[in-house]
Image 1 (spheres, rainbow, N blue to C red):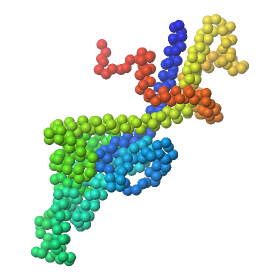
Image 2 (image 1 turned 45 degrees about the vertical axis):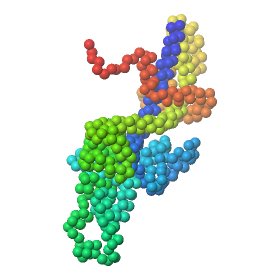
Image 3 (image 1 turned 120 degrees about the vertical axis):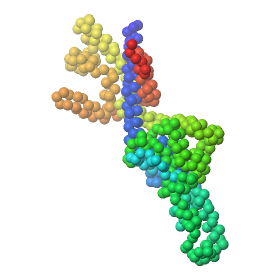
Length: 467
């Protein structure tokens, strides 16, 4: 009875160890792809761009989008877009809406991350402006041209000064005949010093007092946020690599931006002019805090913490399908049939028991072992080879490529593509492949916890001191 329990314990530990190793391999490949393509960082900043700067312009479809749309139509969910698209007036979301969008359009399309800067955060930030690729930027440019083509480059469209100038010019153009002076007291081309002061308002002064500037005269809300985080940043192809922002630090950054912008209400007003989705939760938090700055900071922190939880759930939902694909590739590449592997573990235990009986009973116990050896092979050499190659190592013997290490000749590579393909197309192995794939979906942490509980290993506890 004790021997039977030992056999099943060895079987369980062997299977768990195999699943743990293959799960670590799948997780390592996935993490390498994510790190190489910067997916996690781009996913975060795509969300921040959408939330802080508003939607981006839907200025046509790139070649990459057309290719991915064609691939998407081949799948079952042909109607699922790669991005959360909207009408041209509303723009489209930078955050992908499908697995192809996360692992194809997001890494190889337009990079939503701010540019990396080696400089420390500035003592005084630039004024708030519309993002260059946003719908708000087109709206600001259209308002500037409608107000006055000459003054559009110097007066912030959407600000109080721009509205006053546009209103005054519209009234003057309606009352003054063509070719006449706008001011009867001065010839054409001349103006009072007060008029010149209004028309030449500095962009920095307008931004400090509140207002929305064109993209080339300030920075967007996402870029202002990055300015306060760039001390903990490092470059990755010229872009930020920040993939995680603590909620407390986000709240402090928003407070700093609001103070430099002239107050929370001024910031909310200009974010609303930028059509930023961030203005609505900011107003809700500000009203709930009863205009108390300390309570407002805690409210922004709680709001951002909740948003990060939702974003993490969305990201894991996309990554789960990638892990399914990687798990299938690893299972088929190594030909990991869990049922066959379990039988091998039990057979090895029985084989080792027969060898033990041979050592106790003498040469007559060697006869049953001859069936396990090749014809003409020395049984003693056969036993030694089998015992030196445990079942766990045999996981990798079914791969299409194998390598053997020799002390004299070095590594020797061998191709077993024909055997691997025959094994792969054999229906008898498919149930074992399916069990392996399902087991890999539980992840390495799950199998490590099971192995630790089964083997009696104790988790290392922080704060424990030796007696």
